[in-house]
Length: 119
Image (tube, rainbow, N blue to C red; front, side, top):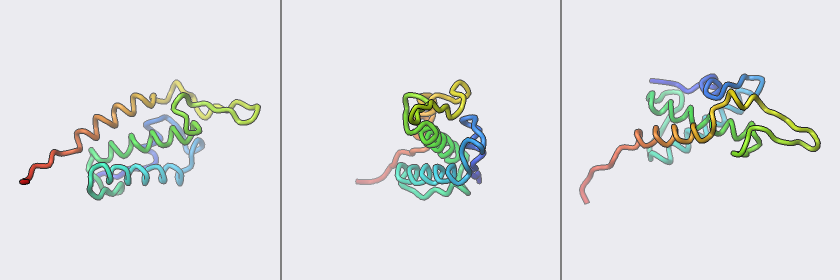
């Protein structure tokens, strides 16, 4: 079984522990876990999951981290604080949210299995 780590998330979006603490990344992993559970209708454990579930959790948590670091904006990775412009991290090293969203949708579709039963 696979396990999602904070380093897995950081590797996807090329950030370090100086950019976002472990506790915050772990919170995003837990959010991703709950979201995936709701989407699939079954229990998921990020500490013990299939490789496919790990991939979905990693990508979804990475999207949550990008949103957190960018101030919740999907339009960019920079924000303004008062009169100061703050750049969270180098945007050219971070995959675009659209790329990650597309990958997430593709992975999620493959994880969903059609339900065959009797009516």
